[in-house]
Length: 84
Image (cartoon, rainbow, N blue to C red; front, side):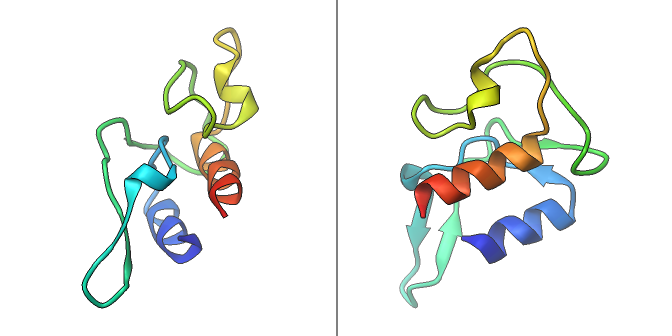
């Protein structure tokens, strides 16, 4: 999971909905991250966005505050830690 997110983030892609339901294993038990419906591309990890997205219980605390901005890359990392 960490390697997969690192790859996405290296290419400035924030998934924004990391949770167990969006993780699958293939026949070789290689983890696959799925469901990129709300993923976005950002300039860098410090770019901030606003708006509530993701799945309650799996997103970073700052995401639910509709009045503030947050880094979707850093929010992905928080969700990854929560899954692990």
